[in-house]
Amino acid sequence: MKRVSLITAQVLVLLLVAVAPAYAKQDQHAQDSRAPDQQQAKPQEQKQAKPETQQQKPQTQARPARQEQRQQPKAQPEQAKANGKQQEQQAQSAKQEQQKQATSQQAQTKQNAQQRQQQGKNQQERADSQRQQSASSRPPQRTEEAQTRQRAEPSLHLSAVGNSRIPDARFRSNFGRTHEFRIGSPRMVDGYSRFQYGGYWFGFVQPWPANWYYSDNVYVDYIGGQYYLCNPYYPGVHVALSVVL
Image (cartoon, rainbow, N blue to C red):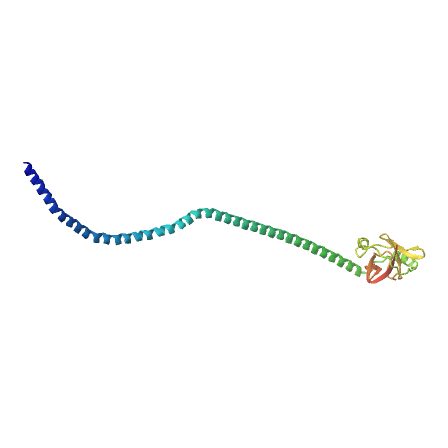
């Protein structure tokens, strides 16, 4: 029995030795047949890998866009704030312009009112002057008593031409066309015929006109550097005066 088992073991060993090279060849042939498939698969894997890298690039490029999108919400409040300031400045400018226009209109209205007032005053003054001129164009009514008294007046004692001046402010407030008065009868002072009015004494440089009466309304005017006595009833006749200070 031992021999039989040994023979059986030896036969199995021989069979394994004979079969092993055949299996080895088959394995090598299977590997060789698989090798081209693997080599062909590698380019495909490489080709498939390249698009992945290309697809990754747009993702890397898309990151700044995402950052910009994240930054835009921050910029919008600042822009809105700037727009608000600009609108506020425009509103202030419009308000200031309206105030200027209102002030200008008020000044223009006030100026127009002053002009109308001045025009009315000038018209009134012209009307008064015309009434006075029309009144002066008519000779005054002389009563017999006035004529008799005028004839009884003595002749004037004339004075020399003087260089004294009345201050302008004093002259405007007391003398001129709008300040008429009556002399009455002249007085003899230091040997000269004189009359007093407005705080000053006046002497006659020229004789009294024949058709003038001391009861007529007269006024003192300053013409060409000389003081004159004027009678509104006889506008073309003047009597030169000297101021006694």
